[in-house]
Image (tube, rainbow, N blue to C red; front, side, top):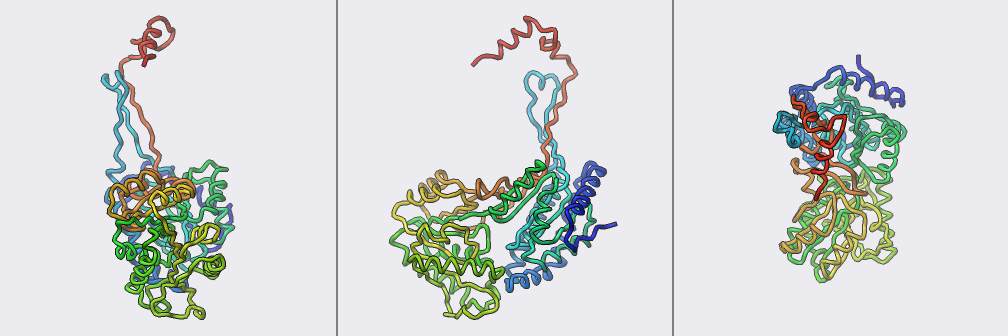
Length: 482
């Protein structure tokens, strides 16, 4: 029997589903590597067999989203992590030897760590990469031997419903189940007593998720965002830098948690930066409005929010420069597209400098000494990503050691997230915990300490079992020293 999930479920129905998964996990006991690989294979099979349909659903949900981009970021971008986990799962599962304390280790005692499935992991996935941020975490979740309940975003309803159908066909609901619905369903889902909860989304929503999880002492991994800075060093190759910065900013129309959120440029190179950025955009996107490679803003609310940021910046004195190669008129259009736009000399009172942008707008701030950029970054909440461009190794090292961020990419943007052997996560307001690769396996595993005692009654021999006396005190005094 399977439980239908296409109608919005009550919290009680979600609890029933969770209890069913937990009971199945307990009854199954140890989860062999072959079972874990089979679940990973079935997830890969969904993507291989239905990637085109998922890309089309994302295109419709966004109003327009590049199908080529979806195949790259969401379909291939999910298969890669799953294959990596499939390849390494057996080695990750091996017990980890630890040292037994002297003299027990010499006499046959042993210590080690076993990686045990947590049980049922909840995943709340966002709308910006709805497939990748649903399937990608399954690499670590399945490799660790867990079952999973998923709540995808209501902002991408066609994609969410299609994923529900595809998981329902490939997995029994006691292995994987998708719960669809709006904010009320999301709130109920986050309050369930999972064994672990992964949330990817806005910091403002994460506060509510964490409060709900706290009622059941559910451990959480929070993948959030923030204002990820770019520091452009004086030694940087400017054209290469803008090619990469604008690629990262225009991918998914900037609707990426790791998108460059502002750029700090030497004062005397700002005009050069603008022209170089203009060339970079024109080379990648000679047109924008009808260009199938350029993605729309997800919905009218976010379109209005971004348009409001531009109006606010203009009203407060910033220079707003559209990078619009074909000079197209964006005022009358059905697809909610926004041209990439530079906001020069932004003030700190502007909304674009106070909120995560999540769109194709890029503030550009000038500086005279690199220490100013470091001070600026450190005066603001710690970001999910930080990007430095330059050939000055001493300056690069200073930026690395004097700033704190979830991750760093040097001489490019965003790319550290694609390195499956690096942990991905934020710090402070940009997130909590990490996953990807072996770090995902560890996040979704219980690292159980095991100690096997020696057969010799060493405790009695050295006098640490009652009745206590001078022999024990002598042993203790031998340990209490510098």
